[in-house]
Length: 120
Image (cartoon, rainbow, N blue to C red; front, side, top):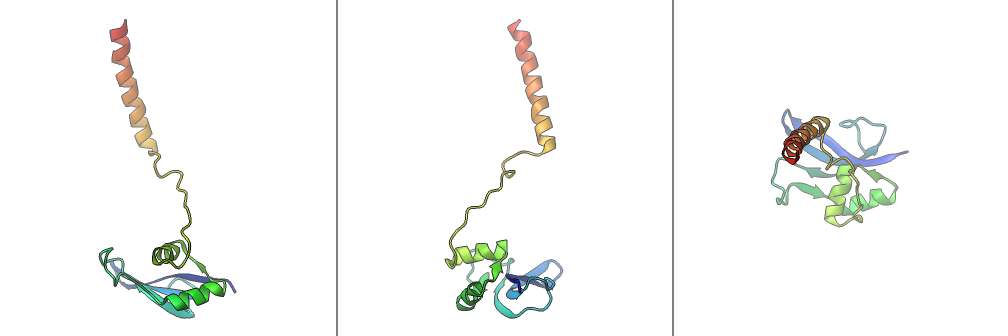
């Protein structure tokens, strides 16, 4: 059975809160789970202690059983010091979009045109 440690969404529209759960990966996101391991409330400030609460012992138990954390939960575990920090690569993060590239090319062409006229 492929196990996951992931977030299950709760709360009303535009007021989310999440449960950190251990579940079979084939179950729906908000569906059946095996154990609730903690909570995450994204509406609280980042420095609040109540923003992320986890039962670290149970999380380590499930990791020992072979459960794979999702990316967001893995970040929580890294911040808590449970798992080693992994390096992530987002190769397109600093790259401007298509429209921005076109604007930059037009601006460069306009800047080059007066420079050519003054050189002659």
